[in-house]
Amino acid sequence: MTDIIIIGGGPAGVSAALTAKNRGKSVKIISNSAELSNLWKAKSVENYPGLPNASGAELMMTFRKQLEDAGIEIVSGRALNALSMGTSFSVSVGQDYFECKAIILTTGIVQQSTYPGEQEFLGRGVSYCATCDGMLFRGKKVAVIGLNEEAESEANFLRSIGCIVEYFDKNRAKKFEIKGEETVAALIADDVVYQVDGIFILRSTIAPNSFLTGLGTDNGHIISDGAMKTTVDGVFAAGDCTGRPYQVARAVGQGNTAALSASEYLDKK
Image (cartoon, rainbow, N blue to C red; front, top):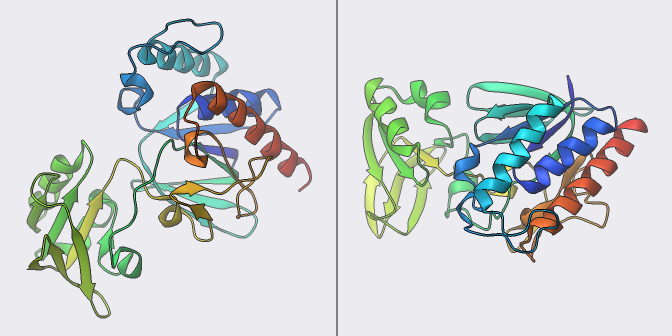
């Protein structure tokens, strides 16, 4: 079992991983590719000490190289949810599960709200992973709300296993509502009703309150104290996911603090 799993491979996640490794903890980072991060797109970061006027891509490549040199494993993928197991946590990434003793959330800016009915029907017709749950809907009609770069390929996967797919990209509809009784029965997209048996909502990141039960948020940001502790024991947060200002230097500092707090938490167990 890994001591600390870090969700997110940006500045806060890298800082947390390096600090935790230096504290003698086993560490695993779960992250999308560096090219998908908001920082990668920045032409120049002028206020990060030691690397004046570096582009976001240059910073990310430097960070990834440092992780590689430190021997820290990066699991490429999107963390779908975490489940408290009492004294440990289980984190799902696609069809894989990873166990750990503590979690540090460094997911970046995730201010998206859930759709009406999304939380209510999660696990009862609503899914965040087509490859994980697609076989449950074989031969049935499903809707795919595609909000990330892999959405079309996941929709094609559903078609390949026999699902009847109604696909919605960002241009087809803007407003969604999920209806049903015991399970999903319909998706309302821009006031048009589509009768479906399942709905796959494919985002680049998962809203914090959908990721882990009991995780407190305020206006889309994860609530944390000065030690970067969240409302869930054993879970810490750092970087842009905790609120403004959205700055690389702040994220790095918070990542360091979160790792120190997580290490102290584990040392006391």
